[in-house]
Image 1 (cartoon, rainbow, N blue to C red):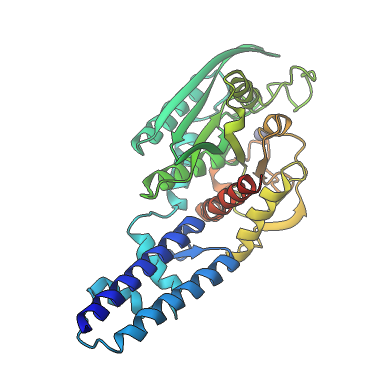
Image 2 (cartoon, protein in one colour; image 1 turned 180 degrees about the horizontal axis):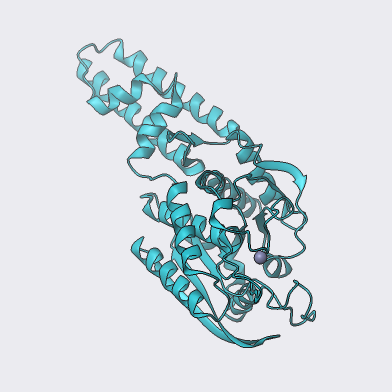
Length: 387
Ligand SMILES: [Zn+2]
């Protein structure tokens, strides 16, 4: 009889503990704090719920164990049993460490440096071709399938060859959450514009996100697309100088991407789009883009707040005017643009150089976006369930 109690209590506990870890890892994302410690950020309500069920799990077998002093659980169980109630964060770190890696702002910064070293990376240039090769080889080194879409398009400065890059991380479903950045830089004849923040920072951070998400042993529920757009920048001096409503002189790559999705009848797969653009400034301060989909902005800003990053994700409007998320919004896709435009004094100047951006800013944005992903997924799943 003692043996039965012992066996029963061990199995109840083990099942409870594994479902606790599973449930939290589904809604939470491993992040790295500025001091390098790992932690989990989960919605408060879910945390409370899982903690309650964990407490039940702990209580049930304990009541049986009182009859069964001879029981001896394996070491891993003892370790887990000793900490979750008082320190759920610590025990989750143990579980998550084994299967995940953290976003590394220094790595993201190193990508930006590589791109800046290549020089100005204008659409159709050989420098952008070199940048593309670098991006593709990085993505492949993470184990991702990479596809390119090459197209030729008329611009105010003549026909240009442009190439969008897409890497896919398959999920449990074919529904997609897209993470995107443009990788071209703006054309300037007067000076060499290297776009450390504008084009560089978001591309470096996106590469690092791709590495981290691909390395996770837990398969995501939704498929991820990591998309690098060509031709975001206007080739004339200003955004609207040369375009027409039907043929704008900007967002060439993203408009092409949406058109391709429509042609392939795949637009419905795309459930959310997160665009990064100019996210690396040393004095990071991202405002809310009013054009972006409200619930996506809210989730990301709430996540930042809970991570104590409210000084960097501030509650003011960030009027952008237009960006690569616009073609997606027009097509009915929920999309958000993370961008620091109004408080970045070096925007579209010769001063947009590597010394203006910092690994820490890239780290903060990387952490917040990665921690937001499970929440965005959860919201989309609940919406589908309610539909
Ligand atoms: Zn720009």
